[in-house]
Image (cartoon, rainbow, N blue to C red; front, side, top):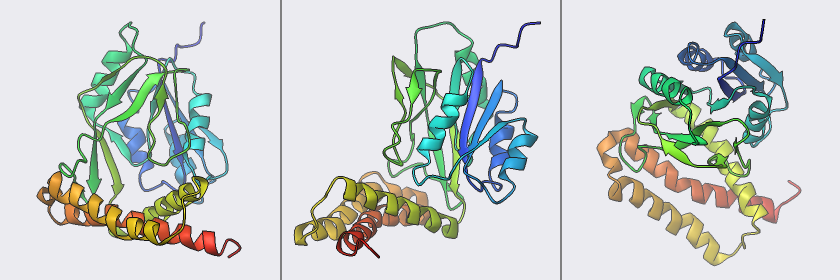
Length: 261
C-alpha cells in the first residue's frame, strides 16, 4: 500500500509554549496532514503537548533569532504545501476552510498572504495600521524560506503570490508582564542589528533614536492611523512601539561603550 500523500505540512518553532500550543494545534488538527515542531529545549510541557497532536518533534538549541529554528522545521516538512505558524496563533475555521480549498486546486501560485488579527492585552487591534497585518505563511515546499535576519521579516517566496480573505488570529500579548518579556528580547535583537549595521554612536543618533523616532512612530500609530480607536490597549501599543527605538539604542550604546560587560 502506497504511503498517504502529504498535502499540507504545518510547521512551528517552539520554546516553553505550553500556554498556547494546544489551542494552536487544535485549530489545524483537521487541516494538517503532518505537523512538524522544532523545539528549543523547552523546560515545560510543550513537547508533551506537541506529541499529543502527533507532531514530529525535533530538538534544537533555542537561538536568539527563532527564525533559524523555523527554517529547520520548513526543511523537515514533506508536504506539497507549508503553513508556518507561531504557537500563539490560531487558524480560524473560515481560514482553515479557505486554505483547504486553495491547496487542493492546481495552479501556478507559489504562496498566499494571510490577514492576521493581533490581540493586544486581550483586545483586537483593528486600527493603528495593525490590521490587516498581512503575513506570508502559506507556500509550496521548496519555494519559501525565512531570511532569518530580522525578527519581523516575511518569508521570501520564489514565485507569484495572492491573498487569502480570512483571519489568522494572533494572541501574542495576553498580559502586560508577558509583553514586557517579549519586548526585552525584541529590543535586544534590534540593538544587535544596530551593532551589525555599525550605526554611529553620537549626539545626533541619540537625538534621533531617543526622541525623533519614538515620537514619529507614536504619532503615526496613534494619530495618523487612528490607534486611539482601540482604546487604552491602542495607546499602550503605540507608546511602547515608539519607545522600542530609544530602548534599543540605549542597549546598543551600552554594548558599544562597554563591550566586555
